[in-house]
Amino acid sequence: MFSGKTEELIRRLKRAKIAKLKVEIFKPGVDTRYSEEDVVSHNATALHSIPVESANEILFYATDVDVIGIDEAQFLDDELPNVCEQLANQGVRVIIAGLDMDFMGNPFGPMPKLMAIAEDVTKVHAICVRCGSPAQFSHRTIAGDKLVVLGETESYEPLCRACYLKAREERQSLAAPLDNNQDGVNQNLDV
Ligand code: ZN
Image 1 (tube, helix red, strand yellow):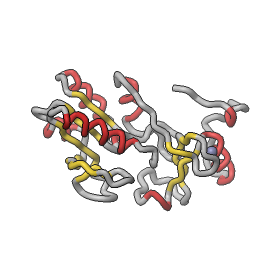
Image 2: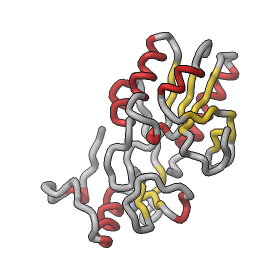
Image 3: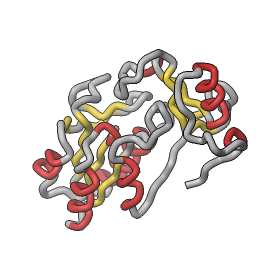
């Protein structure tokens, strides 16, 4: 969140449109924060999009297209990698934006597999609100363990690895994935 990934998706799709390519944009039906039918970034650049309940629905709409964009892909189901591969094999360029990790720091939905099969992966980072470093974690600032919480400014803060681990320690509520790595706080995990 707040990393500019939707802006980057919109930028690439607008360039495809300038190139006179046929573009179709999808987003999960669950993401209804701003508008039912537009992909809207935090700085309010909008492109018309089709809300879908399942990944397979994309195949139904994505006929006679050159490029498809999918926003908030982490909320779509595990069929999404197959759907994207099928489209890519047909010559469609597939551009996906999504959160790679949930608020607990775990890989989010179909994103790991999508990143594995993609020709190209760009990680865009927000800025850590506590120290100003690049932030790759979304720390939830309210209680609860439900995965999908929308209405984000009150609920999430982007944090770097060190500040995220500190915040998590403060809350003393979650098990740390870096348990057996004593130096975890000062190390970066490069993917
Ligand atoms: Zn930080």
